[in-house]
Length: 457
Ligand code: NDP
Image 1 (cartoon, rainbow, N blue to C red):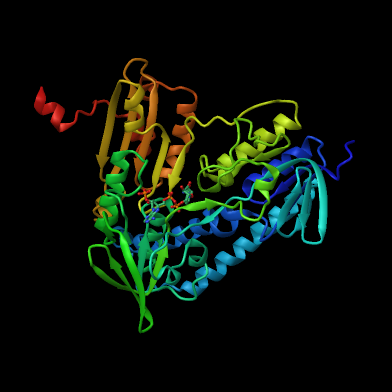
Image 2: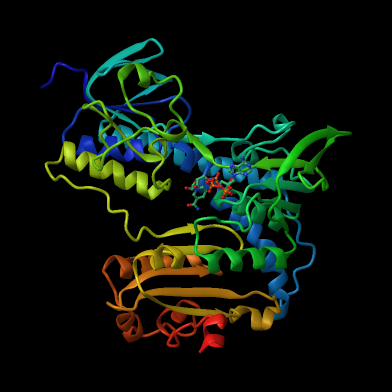
């Protein structure tokens, strides 16, 4: 037994930290963890989980409208924000309790409070001073906002989960995951939403067809999506806010929400004094094993700013624990990580975008844009987009993308196929589930030829 209090001490009890400490304890390590706020981290407390609950709620507005075409008359449907928030909070409390019990059940000691590293083996948490052979930093990230005059009037996603009332008008700034998700939530719940994005199209880094399809659907639903649009200032006036853009457009609103990215939580940890190297925006630099520039200090999840997704942090945590305590060294495999954006409609992606694939492969593209069967009776003008990117040489499917209902549910299975190295011929040989939207992924036969290429032939 080592001379330290713990074999492993984890700073930050979010998804990554909790998974790493529990797995390490299962392997027999004496593990401890500390948390300054609530166990569960961003995902459980103020991210993925409450967001998904709000997304479900927002979708009922369309479900009620769509029901009419199916013979249902739903009169007097009314939404109550306070009920939603109270029920959501109760569920978050329940999950927080489960996380606490999971730590206890695994024998991981929890210390509440904010940590500071005193030396490479000593962590100070309030009155407590503990020592550990290995330290794992899993402190996550927090919302970041640019310096704009009046930015103090804006909220971030953290506060959006606790608003007392649903604002009538909302301005969402940003074009990434959180911005499109909250634009959809507020719009669905009945707010008038303007989304302002500085670039030429939302969801930079996603497949071009995904970006265009989602923007089209958001505009079609009535979201006032403005691209190439920078905020110049925000003013408070007579109980509401006035957003002025760089083009001198003026938007009156009841809420301004910024979703302009997140920054690693490294402040006050004492990393610099320890010699732990940090990079862009303070992200902790780690090698493929999650090890920092200090031998016994590791880091994972959003604080390392690599692929900032909950399941990735969980996987990194388990890989770390299996390597250090389980005698089975392994690294997280970042290829083909499927992901989803819970916008309305939702987005699902696995593997490379067309743009990424074209950098290294000669590709064939298969694309399908169609009206979901449900809307033949509902009358809703909505199109689903599905796309496969195939290596022309090996026939291997390099990427799969979808914008449409249930994209997150559908892309999970496609992610398995891509991880297994499935070829387009194997997709074609797979029998479709009929009638479903998902079957489109195995029935796309015609290569997509861009109009410009057709004209040149
Ligand atoms: P993103 O990095 O996804 O998006 C940030 C957005 O803000 C971009 O559109 C960016 O524009 C814009 N932006 C950045 N700086 C400025 C600025 N100075 N002025 C105006 N706009 C600016 O961050 P999010 O906050 O949306 O989400 C953080 C991360 O959390 C995501 O990257 C993702 O990893 C994770 N997440 C995952 C979810 C999921 O899996 N469903 C859900 C929510 C979050 P530009 O593109 O031009 O840089």
